[in-house]
Length: 518
Image (tube, helix red, strand yellow):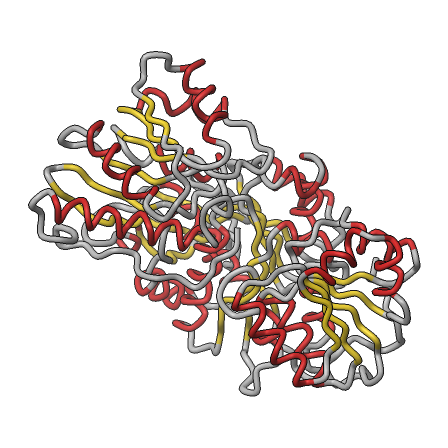
């Protein structure tokens, strides 16, 4: 199935886009990139956003100079809330391009669809704006957890092979900017969220991967099945290899259900010994039995566990799994084994993902603010033996009982903050009634200092104080990066006030971050 188009031939950047009347909903990073690209091609752009953040206001000012019609603030809110305003907003529109944050049941999007107006996401737009000649192939990655690690790891491997490559989409460069870059890329590693996948219909990646499926964003999608279906779209029309997780059978089922290009193969990754058409571990060797000629009897070494160590610390199992997934995608793109290994050695983990902030008084402080759902938090907590857990935020409709029941044996105590902290507290009370739990009610800028101070009272020598919220950050922070930065800064202040070196025992903080998306 191909997404409907308002005009024939809109399948490459040099097509006749001029005069097309487009409504862009949302002026975040991706919405701005979409509006800018459309204006550059002669489209008439109307943009709507109810927000008023300084960054959005600056983007709107630029678009207004370029000739866009803007409905912002109260006018933008009215376009979504009032039927007459919606009708005016959609009048004369040929196409709607929506941003990932806009739910499909948003009245303005529903009205557009009911009125026969095509609705594309920015991923669909980016695919249709690729150059007609020799467009860079896409290697697409989704999953509840690990997709940013895999995509950035993959980009490092591709560059180690001498390719001009970037990580784009839900991380790094906005996808439209990558597609339209004046110095074209050889290949693009694309992270796709379930929000983005919901709206795409035409993308045909060279290779694709769904790393895992666990309940997340159920409020946005309307249920687990809709969320699963969105994730499964990553495999549609894949050309060479659909990469799945042997330890997560649902990802294999999604491959089986996908409509792919004739000749596309299913390639699994596993932490065990790989069967044919899989990558996996043979003792301490990362082995490829999928992209070798004699895969029935031989394998290619694409790295070792030592290549994934950092500062002498062995990689956690989920990091090894991420490396195998990235390696499979790279091999599908023709990257030789030596380049895979060199890329894995060169890779540096992204901020706020199990990052040691400080070690003081035999207590280790770790920032995993990127653990914005229960599945990610479970992987993070499983890394350590004894944990003071800092959790809470927006649970996005997810249940926490299974997570809490599994991790209770590792917990020294818990410090809870954020909008849905009471739900985590209730689960802890059910499964660990004697566990010390501290409830931090503050939501101001000093809240994280209180969280850190209270966590310090629970920690014992040898413990890890772990920020793994299992929840999104937007109730208190602009994004998970800002939450992690606040945690790191509070830890450094606490250590300094406790007579420590004012930071960490030889380890740095995570540093400021670029508005990551959850």
